[in-house]
Length: 90
Image 1 (spheres, rainbow, N blue to C red):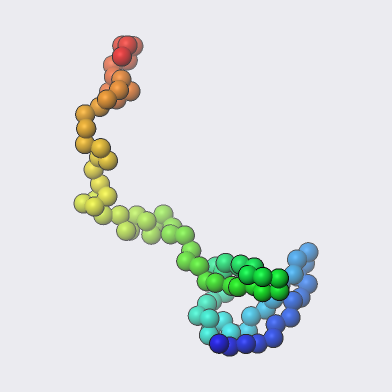
Image 2: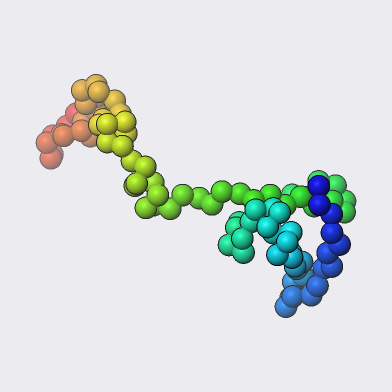
């Protein structure tokens, strides 16, 4: 495990840390990688790379009509809300 010293710096109204290129390379992350921060104990912080949420385009590309298509329930309509004629009582 690689250990390096990092200093917390003021950054506007917040604070931040800088990760060196070498540390980022050994973590396998880039500047756009989303991170999850977890406080494990007082003075102990864990950073983990997380998978970004799939975009709509990614979801549509993964859609398989044979697997995901069709009706969820194959029963006949059960209530008057399905195909009922306008103005008729159930």
